[in-house]
Length: 275
Image (cartoon, rainbow, N blue to C red; front, side):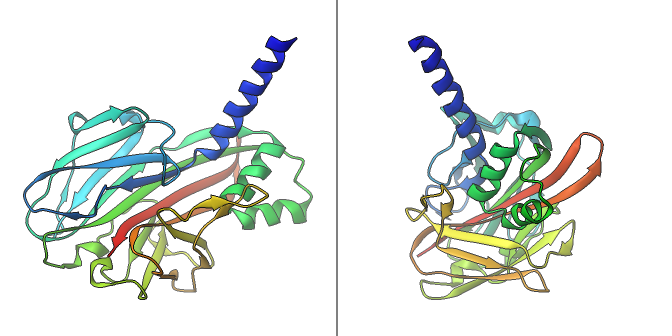
């Protein structure tokens, strides 16, 4: 009896972990890097503080590093290694300037019970879909979701600030800064625009926070420094209240009228550092 109970607890914990381990980030130990030097960046799959699992190279549809010249360098699979539960990309910086690195993953499918799907929507802040399900009386319906993740990091090489921060990688969904984060300081605001398949995405929930702030409330939902929405131009504004490493994240989800799929989601994050 005890053994069966223990197995049930373990299965439940694994299920909860699989629901929680969603967000993906490109995270540097510092976003201020030397020129013409070998550096590394972590691909975090979980929370900004901890990666739950490494990412298979076969899932990576695109890996790009864009420097001041705006020409994308495409690191190959040999430049990746897995360190415990984290995938790590090593590459060499070029000359001084502001750079963007990005990773875009292939879609995957997941089937969730009604309870687990509703919990995930609440936990990760997909509140518009949760409201749609509530209003339609669909909270008792399970869901099959097709999801993919598209992540970027803006980092500074040397002291020369350039317009590389605004490079678009043409991912299905993308967060693009409107100002160079490395010309800003604590107390400033960073405007970002969100593009879905190349078009400005309006009324999208956007969350942002800095390292060490993230937590959960009594209902298990994320607690983050900023919750806002994009305007008609797809723009959201992030007040930079603290120094350190920051992230901006969002999940765009919509119902899908396809056999075997109920929803499609595209996840996006952007990371940078504030001095």
